[in-house]
Amino acid sequence: MSFIACQQTNTKKQKNGQERELHAKKLEHAQSFELSDAGDYQLLKVYRKRKKNDAYEAFALVPEGGTAPESDIQSIPVPCKKIICLSSTQLTYFFALEDIDDIVAINSSRHLFNKGMNARLKEGKVKRVGKEGHFNTELIAGINPDVIFVSPYKSGGYDALKNLGIPLVPMAAYDEKTPLGRAEWVKMIAPFIGKEKEADSLFNNLSQRYNSLQELASKVEKRPTVFSGKMRSGTWYVPGGKSFYANYFRDAGAQYIIENEKQGAYPLDFETVYTKAAQCDYWRILVPEPIGFDRKALISQDPRYGDFKAYQEGNVIMCNIREKPFYEQNAMKPDVILADYIHFFHPELLPKHRPEFYELLK
Image (cartoon, rainbow, N blue to C red):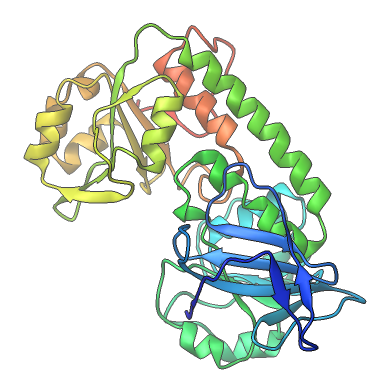
């Protein structure tokens, strides 16, 4: 996926040499994209990393009757009527905006919970076009979509898609380090389907709920300790101290045991994790396990798990993605997930809340 160097400016030169003023859309939390109104079109920039002078991809979203900018920026007529999503995490924004009729194809993910999308798949209105490295380019070419949303974090197969001449728009929401940052990407999707007002209203409502819950949890006197993840192929990938999950835990009134400046996950061996987490109050895991996965099944994977205090005291918080639509909903339900965490960390704060994604491992 090719990126160009960022030269930030509030004007854009047109073919006729005139300067067009750009009015940037105000974003409260998202750091990895920008939307600017240029009058006849909107300029979308998706950053590899949200830093000044960093690389980005640019697209001109041109409504009916609008005028496309100079040829070095790829133009996409909007609203789009034929959209392909190559990750289930992208679908969450369309589900939240109640717009799935414009999606004509998805990747070949097996676990899909949305009833409307499953019905459209069954009826043949939505096709499965394969996974990274194994895309059915002939099928995609036959569909001739207006746009394809791709993941900048995965590789394989995109070169073949580029040759089709179809706009490939990277969805970099997972580069955001805060729950509200990821949720605000609904404002990036909205212009593609003509739902800007709905997206603004949706985000404002969920961010208000999130901030209210965060404020509630900020007043607690005692913050329980928590750690995250488990062994995978002999390695324990631990979220950094400034990571997305670390921010969630802090907002829920817990103390995450990793206190460093790392933003992503990094590998540790079991002994190192155990030294840090043995006496933690809570253990959070996200697993793709058979339905009915329980404490016995967890301990069968590694008997050493039984040595953790959180396991012994029944405080393992689990979301099983084979039972819960986590990946296709979580980005647009940060308030719900925060309430789930608070429910376990501080049950007295939300006595009537029924967890939607997480549960105590039985």
